[in-house]
Length: 347
Image (cartoon, rainbow, N blue to C red; front, side, top):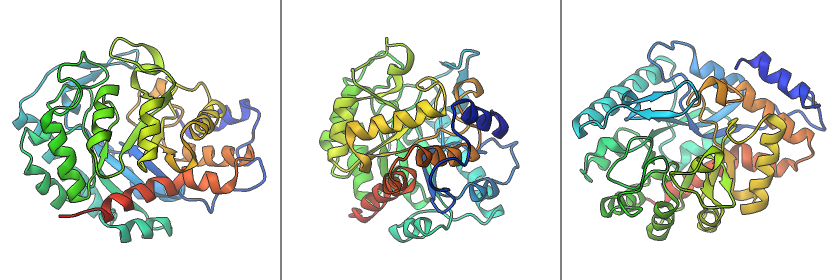
């Protein structure tokens, strides 16, 4: 969806792009999950797009199982191959190398410390190197130290291909939730200062992970559902964190990133209402933007660039959402979570 299309949706919803009591240009944006411009053939200027929308902190996520899954015409994902650990490691290494090349070409900066996050909160763009799925570990706990040295500061434990860390929401459970190795990975991430992302994990796996983690955790993208779901569920429930787990995650200082996805919301007004509903359920300190930018099919997303997320900030203000709350959701909550995990590093 292009910028013009998103703006027309705002107009159709009865709220102008710059309507309301305040213009949002001074409010920065953070995003807990993005694949923006990760395709090798996309040579657009990532720094330009993020800078134009005043985005200052982005989790830039590679998927090591990406080559082994296929998007179907209806937007669903199909697993084509369960690869070997060596294949996953090769994909991870190749994608990380490509991200590094873009970072150098555009003179981008990584958020690796709390000081870096503070710079992002002051308006200086920083990327959080992230993964969606940790298949590349291949059962090797020590490889996490290598990953940390490479600059990765956020790891999603699961994605669409089954792994050895935990059960995922879109496949029949086989591990009883979180595996013993999954628990070891969480503990090592806690010690290193790597933020653990639980998106795509089953309710059982999330509950177990929250019980053993000594650091606050992230659910980077989807929604909160009042009812538990499983791999047989359909519609928006299958990908959403349960309210019970979201409350525990929030009580431990964690954050839930809300998807601007048509699986959950029909239009921008509905998305803002969804953000407010999440705030009502778990508190304003624990809700953030989780765009999954360019990770959703074009028919399933409200936006394919960050001008759309900037428009959401304007819409939140126009609906008289308190500016302090908008600031938390738009930028501060994700930054606070990262700083807590980075500062909790024990080595």
